[in-house]
Length: 145
Image (cartoon, rainbow, N blue to C red; front, side, top):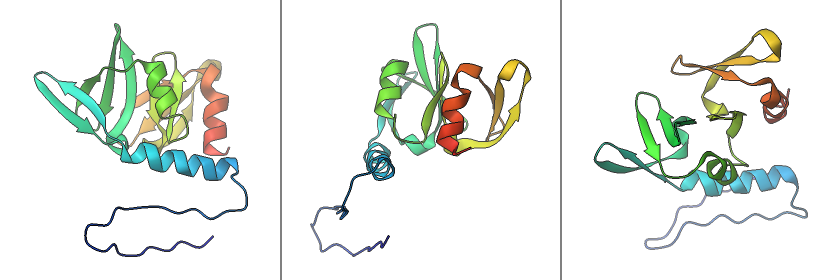
């Protein structure tokens, strides 16, 4: 695969052109990842409204009918439901790991086996999250294990 990056003339819009004989699943995943990675998520913290880049989010967690986006050192509330976020980020680095959590696999430092077929993921900020055994096969597939 050849990648060409050209500088833009002033006022020109960024564009990505893909030339391929077939659109396989790997290429589609790349396209979805590019689209989702550029979009920002509106988040709320006390009286503040801000935009979060998906790459800054470690995981989404649902607690008491509120969904939070957890970043390295802060937590923000988002208005989307967990199933909506799962659909929005389905072909990116985000994957559901339990009924109440979606994690960004690019933020996982290591995975440790636990009892009863569950796994524990240690994130790059040293936070630990449990991967329910029901979601272990999906995670292994995502990681290519």
